[in-house]
View 1: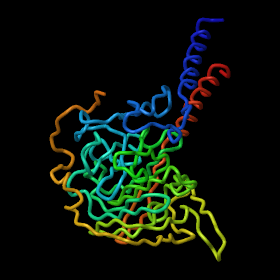
View 2: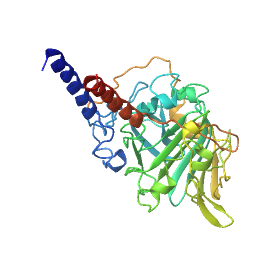
View 3: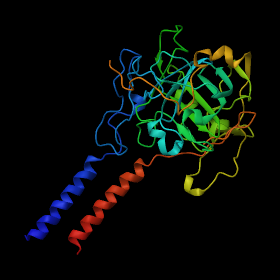
View 4: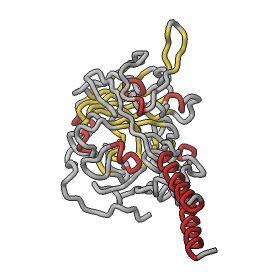
Length: 355
């Protein structure tokens, strides 16, 4: 065999090794990984090498050494109207669809090792606890979470097209079902839509038989109105008890249950929906002043101010006054990239043996 042929075979072998090394899916999906909070947390929940989207950018062990406005903590707490975190971007003017894999936690209270939500972020909130999930929906000034003004956003969940979650390795915990403020349960099913100065976050009871249905993650293009029906109002801060909604995507026509099929993005904008979302009944609603709820973040400034401290541990949605929203979905490119890489290897193979 000539030196040129040997050289070509070496190039082919190297190219194929890259294809084999860059896998799409992890051995264990993020939504199947269990860690006790806080003592059982790993430094990173997503650690497998050679996956197509790269390594987890933040970390899950978060404490006093990471609690500053440069924190990259990706462990989020969701407990109550005055005690919850949201996913936001690490850098200013970020577009959710471009950075969903790297989103980090911003919290309404100190003590979790995260960034704190800047004062003035919330314009109105509704927290609801139902038999199957807790949900918070609200109006926000999204640039304070480093999300670009005018970005209609997307959807975050523990699945993603490659089963690694968005953000990669992002973990969620709650004390809503434990009966103790100091006892946390890992939330295995949740979804968070954010964009258009509006957001909704739902965390489903891990003990519930239908957690995966109530926190469905496949309807990323139809937003809060359909995935988290609500009565949120701009300027109102309230906590309510509520009934559970219909499963997202499930509706009735003349008494017959139907399931909506979301068209792919390449089919264009969703002009009409076959059904209107039903907001479940709520009761025992208590209203508060923002200052009563968020005194702990009253002095936290928006992104751009100077920060101090270490950042590593040592141990599309559009809102209306009624709260309805329609998300422009943001899909990750894991599958596309996988096929592109394999196709490249095929081109090399053809060039060697068909020339």
